[in-house]
Amino acid sequence: MAGSLEDIPGVGPSTAKKLRDGGYIDIVSIAVAPIAELMERTGLGLETASRVIREAREMTKIDIISAKELYERRKGVLKCTTNSRSLDSLLGGGVETQALTELIGEYGAGKTQICFTLCVTCQLPPERGGLEGGAIYIDTEGTFHPQRVYQIAENMGLDPSSILESITIGRAYTSDHQMLLVESLSSEVDMSRVRLLIVDSVISHFRGEFVGRENLAERQQKLNKHLHTLQRMAEAYNLAVVLTNQAVADPGQFFGNPNKPAGGHVMGHACTHRIWIQKGKQGSRLARVIDSPSLPEGEARFMITERGIEDLEPEG
Ligand SMILES: Nc1ncnc2c1ncn2[C@@H]1O[C@H](COP(=O)(O)OP(=O)(O)O)[C@@H](O)[C@H]1O
Ligand SMILES: [Mg+2]
Image (cartoon, rainbow, N blue to C red; front, side, top):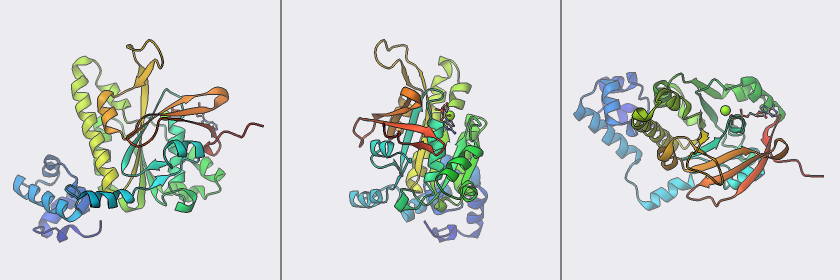
């Protein structure tokens, strides 16, 4: 939302400076900030910090709203094409804003290829199924491949250089770094130009760093906090948030799928739409909805090609 920090009642130039120095450059970022974090980053006392957050929430109407207002806000939900009609239709029209969409699968399933494709399609105009906005790609495994994204954009008939310019890459080296990167986005990037936020993969640092049963509770607590930050950003900035997650062996399963998504209940509760991706016949890929409040269970088939992902060739 527009408006400068000095528009918040009770905020003068010196408080505004502390807020800006702490990385809070717009009113929304203050409205959604946890109080302890805001105090730590700005040096403001408890009383001032809570008053500033309360006023910012009042101005942005971010917490208590009527069902009618919620209805209006939900009308602002946009859908971004995946470049595959079959996958779009599985997703109810595409990847949606104000929600977390989780792509789960084994290594090589095609999760990252879907993310690359979305980095391009989100920049398309609405009449081509896009969101006319930029993308942020939080890369935790060093898998972002600009040449591949260039190829996808070029093969879609777009200007690859300008597509790459509108993708911001954040390389996260640890789970703490990953959390910090996401929390500081609103102070580093003009969020009004962004429509897609990808975290690929959301879980790998957490799994790698917190090994063993005794560390599980702490890991889940941190992961939970991270996912809540992502959800708040999805709502505050009307972003499509896409997370990738690993499939891990499920020792309790003897029939059916021998794998389950990593991250346990914390992931399951936080993600709005959970999509399982796996390899199919002749290099095709299969996507399945495993959990969603609004999407019916179903399947979609697609392929990975020089245009990113797309529908299977009609069989001839
Ligand atoms: N240019 C391309 N053309 C066709 N298929 C590709 C291309 N680049 C990658 N792939 C396919 O994508 C697969 C990797 O998918 P990826 O998204 O990295 O998996 P995940 O992120 O789920 O581990 C490769 O095994 C290959 O089959
Ligand atoms: Mg990957």
